[in-house]
Image (cartoon, rainbow, N blue to C red; front, top):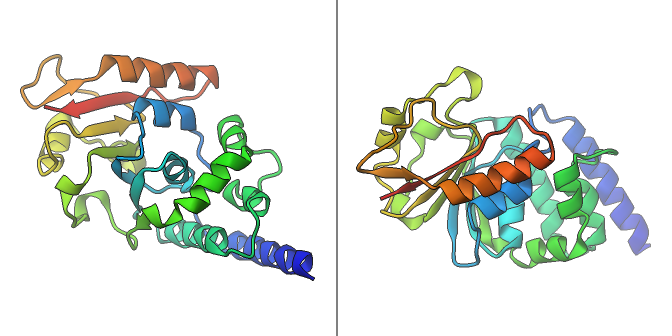
Length: 228
C-alpha cells in the first residue's frame, strides 16, 4: 500500500513537471566545479541563480544556507514541485533521486553521479530548510539584504538571453555586498581588468573549477571573483 502511494506520487509529479514550460530541467554545468570553485561550506550563506535547482541542492547537501532566484516563472514552479516532493517524509531518499534528475532516463554525468549518491540526497533532505527561493524576479530587480550573503552563484546570468554585463555594470550591481564576498561566474566577464581596486580574480579556485568543466568537455569557462 505504501509502495503504491509513492509510485502514484512520483507519477503525479512527473505528469505535473511535464506540463510546466521551463528551459532547464537539469544543469549542464559540473556540480563539482561549482562546489569546489566556491568552496561551499556549512557556514556559507549563498545567493544563487535557480535554473534547474540542482546547483542549489548540491550546495544544501554541503550544509550551506541557500537562497535562489530566477526570472522565469516556469523554472520556479518546476523547482517548487520537486522541493515539495523532497519535503514529503513519506517519500524515501531513494525515491527522490529520479525527481531531482528530472526523470531523465539518461541524465548528464555530473548531476547523475552526485544525486545517485544516496548520502548526498539524505543530506539535502536533512538540510532542506536551509533552502529558500524568491518568486520570479530579474537579477536587476532583486530586493534583499545583500550583506547577509558571503557567496554568490551567478552561472551565466550576466550574459544570458542577450544580456552582456560589462565589468563596470557588474561592479555597480555588486556594490551592496560585503568585502570578501565570492562571486562565481560560469562565463568570464569580457572586460574584467587586470587590476582593480575593488575586485580581484581568484586564480586558484578558477583553475580548479575549469579543470572539472574540462573533464566533462563542457562549454563553460568558470571565473571566481572576490570583492576586496
